[in-house]
Length: 490
Image (tube, rainbow, N blue to C red; front, side):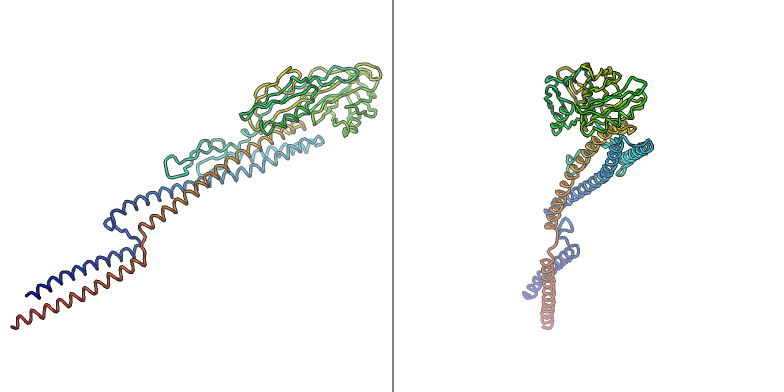
C-alpha cells in the first residue's frame, strides 16, 4: 500500500508539472502571437501602469506633432503667396521707374498706369483669397493665433501674419518745406541754412540727430540722413525744382547761367519756351539741371540730386522770372523773383534751394531744430501713404510712387521674415517632438515587446517539460495498475 500511496503523490506532482508547463506554453504562445509581453493586467501588474502612461504620452505627442506639421503647412502657403506678391511688387517698382520718364507719350503713360492698376489688383486678390482651410492668411485678420508646439497645455506659439492688402502696404512719408527763391542780387545769395537747423529722427525705438552745417544744401543734408538709415530706417531724397518763365508776349533773346554755366542764346516768350528748353538741356551734363516745358509755357528746371540751382540773367532783357517749386514738381513756393538787366550791375541772380522727402516702411517722427523757415524737415509724425494712393500720371508722381513701392517691399520682406522665423521655430519644435516620440516608443518597446529568441526558448522548454511529465504520468499510472493487479491476484 505504501507503493500505491507514493505513486499517488508522484501523480499529483506530475500533474502539477503538466499544468504549469501548459500554462507556460499558453503564455509563450500569447506573447509570440501578439509580440507583446503584457497581454492582460495579470501578466505583470507593476508594468501595466507604466505601459498605459507611455501609450498616453505617445498619443498626445503624436497629436502635437501632427498639429505642428499642419501649422508649418499653413505658413508654407502664406510664404508662397508672399513670394508671389514680392514678384508683383517688383513689377510695380519697374512700372513706377518707367513712369519717371518724362519722354513717355500720353498713350504709353496710360498703358503704364493701367498695368500698375492691374498689378495692384493681383496683389489685392492674393491678400483676400490666400487661405488655409477656413483661415484667411494675408488679409490682416491673422493676428495672435496660437499654434500648439508641444503636448502640454502651455506649449503654444503666438503667430501674426501681416496684411498683404495694398491699403496696408506703403510708406510713412514726410515732405520737408520748400523755401522761396532768394531775393535777386548781383550774385546769387548763399544757401540760408545755418548750423542751428539740426534734425532729430525718432523711429524704431531709437533717435538720431542729424548735424546740419551752415549753407548745407538739401543734397548735403539728405546724405547725412541716409548715413544713419541703418539705425532709423528712414531714408531721404533731395530734389530741387524751379520755374523759369517770361512775362513778354513776344519772343525775346536771352542767355543765362545755370550753376555758373552759360547757355547759348535762346528765345523765350510767355507762349513759347521750346528754344529755351533745348538750349538749357544742352548744358545739363555740366549743370546737373534738366529742363522741360510745362503746359502753361514755363520752363521746369529740375536737379534730381537736390543741389541748389543758381540762375543768372546774362542778357539785357528784364522779363525773366524765377519761382521756387515744391517737391511735388508743380506747386509754387513764395512769390516769383524778377531777374534784372544782366548787362548792368543789377539784381540779376537768384538761388533756389532744394527740399527733402523722408520715407520709411516704419512709422517715424521728425523734430526740426532752429528756424523752421530755414530747415529741411517738418516737425511731427510722418503720414502713411498706401499703394492705392499713388499715381503714375506724371514723372514726379511716379518718383513718389517708386519710393512708396520700395517701402512696401521692405514691409513685405519683414512679413516674410516673421513667417520664416515662425517656420524655423515650429520646425525645431517638430524635430524635438519626433525625437521625444521615438524615445517614448523605444521605452515602451522595451517594456512590452517580446524577445522572440528568449520566448521561443521558453516555449520549447515548456513543451518539453509537459511531454516529460505526461510520459512520467503514464509510467506512474502503469506502475500503479500492476501493483493493484498483483494485490488482487493474491
